[in-house]
Length: 66
Image (cartoon, rainbow, N blue to C red):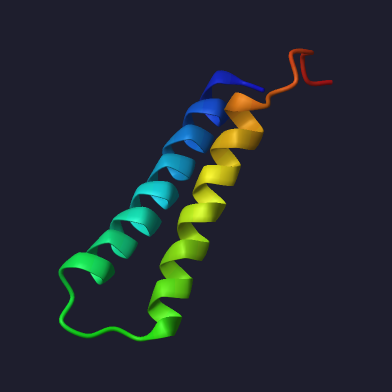
């Protein structure tokens, strides 16, 4: 994986994770009223970001890409 692609993947994955989990925190602790679809959407975005981080960085294949 090239360094630019790796950097862009890291930025996008961290942004998704922060937006999803930050949005969930806002909905649970600060929002006056929210609906179930908003909670499901923020959790989905957060999980996608965390999975992206896990797949590309934590569980990365040590072999170089072909």
